[in-house]
Image 1 (cartoon, rainbow, N blue to C red):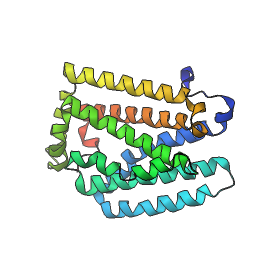
Image 2: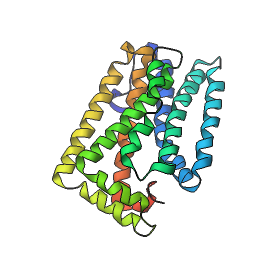
Image 3: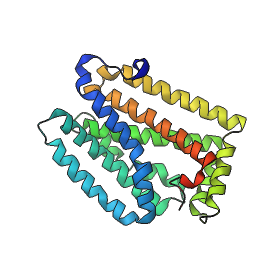
Image 4: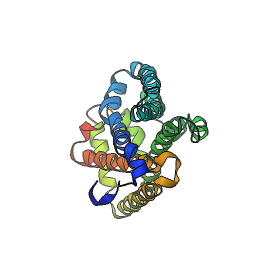
Length: 236
């Protein structure tokens, strides 16, 4: 990557580049696939978790180290996918439940950090931290108050409400909070990347990719709320 942000030393290079990139892509995937799918049919989207788990288990058994690692990450992704389907499918009007639902597999992930599923655990935990940072920033800026109205509004009213939420973030104090929060996330990502060799199997590189990609997704979501709110996955 430009400027060496994602550069690692030779021992981790063999897996960190493809795996970190695909992990980052998995952060973006729910925006384009899961969000519209859950809106149309949350039950089938939830059942798709089984397909993800099966594919992950098969890939994890591969003799190819990269394929095996990607299978492990797919298992971690399946946890985030399942939580997202449950929340956005049936509980989306209750933002206070967002993090508790997303964190349903937290004990398993913490227990898996030192075992064969360390990459799955790292992906899941990184995604959870990114989600928590987003929710905390929304609460701190006061935009959380718009959430229930936006997700329950009619098709013609929702874009306007979402646009108003985006405009609220452009006020000086909310904007300052967003800048500070983004800076902290970037610093955390940089530290994780630099500390990759001291973490298990260089997992810090992947965690950094997940966190920073979450930040980019949040930025794109804010931009869409201001320019074309109808493209948001929040709107029915």
